[in-house]
Amino acid sequence: MPPALEQLLVQHCAPTLLGAKAASLISLSRSVFECPCTLARQLHERFAPSGLCFTVLGGCARRVLLYVYRPALLQKALSCRRAQRILGACGYPLRGELEALLTHLRRRIGADGGFPHEIGLFLDYPPGDVEAFIQTGGAGCKLCGYWKVYTDVEAARRRFARFDDCRARLRHMLAAGQTLSALLEAA
View 1: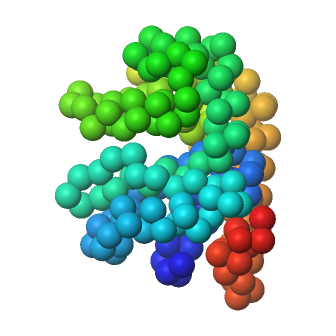
View 2: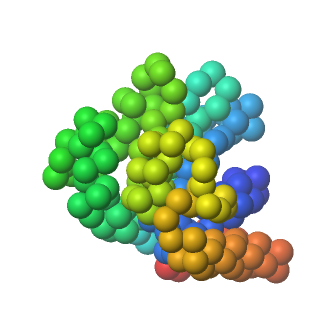
């Protein structure tokens, strides 16, 4: 794995890589990563046995959105009643398989009219916060961190601290000369 990719994955995906979060999203520059779709496929094939999946959700001429997720955790996050209600209101197939939900998300990302805010559900944000963000247009949050928090501030602070710890642990590992690949393959 290229060192530049390791650094980006640690910076943006550490909680997902360590199993503390269902999914993360990272924007890759096509000028740095010449074939990001091929890279995503290679990463997926290499790390799927350890429970991590990589896929491209969308992109433009300059950038590609790489989605890193743990299917079991993501399925759980998307299956709660409140998440299902939000997804249903956005036209997602209810009770759909995970791949059908991701396919619908890709279509929504590719459609004109802005970025689909329900993506927060696919990033393992609390459904109440996603719903409030959609309703308020992002205004009036109580705390801003990995996402805008409208509901349980203390629970969000605990999760944010856990996510920060994940990032710090992986940064320390890389600084000590270990590779992210070795860690993920051992998982």
